[in-house]
Length: 230
Image (tube, rainbow, N blue to C red):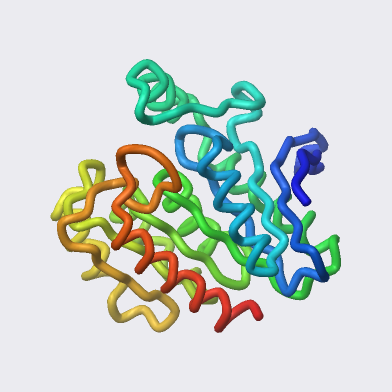
């Protein structure tokens, strides 16, 4: 079952979200954190796949404070340009508070554990969620700007996995090296590298997808969630 729901935010507003529920009782919940393209068809499909695996999946519309309902296609140049402009308007600290509201909403549904998975901007937010909330487990794909967040690594108390695209146009080699230098010895953090892959390789649809790398990363994510959530 899929539907659009409303989540009460920490500041007393209503945030829209896409929800995909499994046929039976959820074994856990997973917050799916959007790219800069909003809760688009790819993010909704990520939720649907998680529901098929037995999880309650919730994708909060994190751009709702700018404009609700944004859904963009990165393969269309004007929509990519709009997505980049939205990134500049987005308050990431407020976004974490809205993710916190989604975590609380999921726990109110009666699940024991809640995880998070994010892509691009969402990968960065997944790292921040691991450092700033009580999420049970987090996964980030091609997270941007993690080198600037390494000062928060001491606060990561629960498992975090990061998938790193080796030829990421938004995460250069120096940033990748800083991620490894800062996180390789962290007992709660696991890093996986994908040589030759570019940003967005695990998208569900479109030109950016790289099937072999996406399949491998998604298998690792599924096993990570099974270990820490099931």
